Amino acid sequence: MKAKFLIPLILFVVLVVFLAIGLNRDPHEVPSPLINKPAPIFEIPQLAQASQTFSPANMKGQVWILNVWASWCVACREEHPVLVDLAKSGQAPLIGLDYKDKREDALVMLERQGNPYLLSAFDADGRVGIDYGVYGVPETYVIDQAGVIRFKHIGPLTQQILNQKIYPLLTELKKS
Image (cartoon, rainbow, N blue to C red; front, side, top):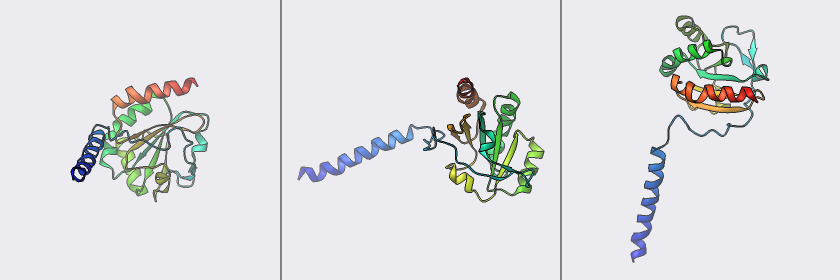
């Protein structure tokens, strides 16, 4: 008779423990199965020059940053000044991936707010984003010289994230 009451109690306690663990995690640090794996390969048109394409293969031999963004994304606008500072730092090439957007809207946004990107690839249908496991924009990836994803950040970048995580990682990757 006691076992009937004990089993639901144990299940409840286990559930509470898992919930407590989940609530203490940073939602921007969702583990990605792509960390330390080759970045998905793609070739899509560039945003500004639709007749030209971009592929991660173009970046082989360089440590670089891929930032997934869209003109309709409020958080992307919040992050934009940080990206401008990142680009000015010259730490690594910054490539944009314009995700599920209208080309005209994206170009207007970059014209108004400044264009921090070396170039932006235009992922109109979101297929490249799906391959990268994009949860939502903005997301940022650091990719090493061999084309391996070494870091993923979900949500807008801040100066603190750049200083504490991205800049030290870029320095370390450039040494190897």
